Image 1 (spheres, rainbow, N blue to C red):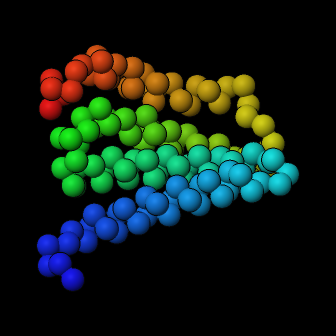
Image 2 (tube, rainbow, N blue to C red):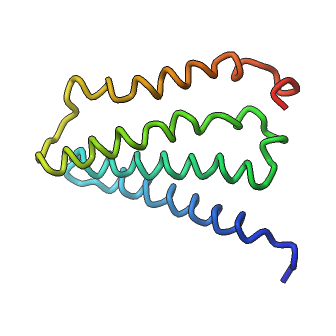
Amino acid sequence: MNENTNWLFVIVGFFILLGFVVSLILYLTNRDKSLTPRILAVILFCISYSLFGYLLYISKEFLRFPHLYRTPVFMSLCVAPLTYIYVRSLLEQAFRFKKWDILFFVPAFLYTAQFIPFYLLPAAEKI
């Protein structure tokens, strides 16, 4: 085996793939179309995508793909509100979002909106 294998890259890549597969299975195989498994699937997707950003960083691939560099920001900021909504829907046996739940995501939208000028830059300037 190659001695230069970056085991952190392999482990993180495995968990990213595992997270995407589990979230896809949870989202698509939900027979009764209830809310809680779908929220859990979105939470796992957000965590996996945030790990993808970390994978880009540890492998220095964000230099080759500079447009992906700050995209996990929104997903990482959505994990906490989604987890709260997931636990609340489990405890209350709720089957829908409440109308004020969108307010939990305002910080994620505002923080991501702050990056819009960065997202619009060409690749050479992002590097």
